[in-house]
Amino acid sequence: MDNKLLMDTAVLAGEILLTSGAETNRVEDTVNRILMTSELEKGEALAMSTGIFALLEDKNKVVTTSIRRVKRRETNLNNIYIVNNISRDFCSGKCTLLQAYDALAGIAQRKQYNKILLLLCFIVTSASFTLLFGGGVFECMVSAINGIIIFLIGLIKTRKDMNRLIVKMLQSLAMAVFTVLFINLLNLNINLETVIAGSIMALVPGVALTNSIRDLFHGDYLSGGARFIEAFVSVTFIAMGFGLGLLLGKIVFGGII
Image 1 (cartoon, rainbow, N blue to C red):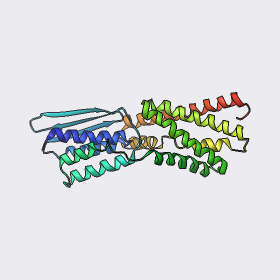
Image 2 (image 1 turned 180 degrees about the vertical axis):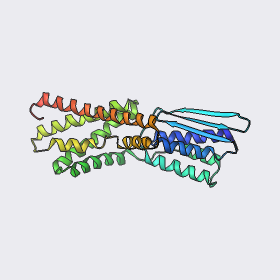
Image 3 (image 1 turned 45 degrees about the vertical axis):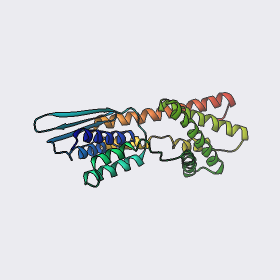
Image 4 (image 1 turned 180 degrees about the horizontal axis):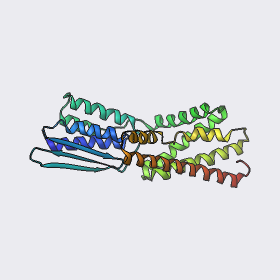
């Protein structure tokens, strides 16, 4: 077996999982299972929120190591599902090492969802949570438009590679300004708090917070703490954006808050 290709395959699988928002315990387990298919004496993997360390060692204590820095993180459950299936197929002998590597390498070029579908998801998510929080027709309509705003500003990050925290703050800022503007221009009896609560749910980092707790339960205190801080900072930027937007609306229109 080509040990270098095996190492590259294992680390690539871990990188995709970590980039897609998987918990570190899952990343380490996947990388370890792939490494242990070798005939070498030892295979170890260590995953953190920002990188992966992997090691292969033979009977003569000759060590092969790999370090992969992970800078980008998002939530992509479909990628996690695909990597898990590829890993299971390879470890059970259903595919060769080269086939597994090619399948993993092809994930980066895979376009999973078109922009229209993503737009509809943001619209439905924002409107549905507003309805869940007790909003009426007008509240849901405003929240649906806020979903469009989230999508459009999110395109800036894709094209300009902006910091995602800044993008989240801009999204929440734009939603707050639009909501205040809409209420004042149409003079409708709209519950501002319900609209904000429903719209903000599309930005809340729920997966990151959940994974941080799961990492802590598995004893990965470093990764769990880092993910928890990441989720807390993300929520802080979202709150800052909404606060600035509402303050701006109060200054311009007066008396809405």
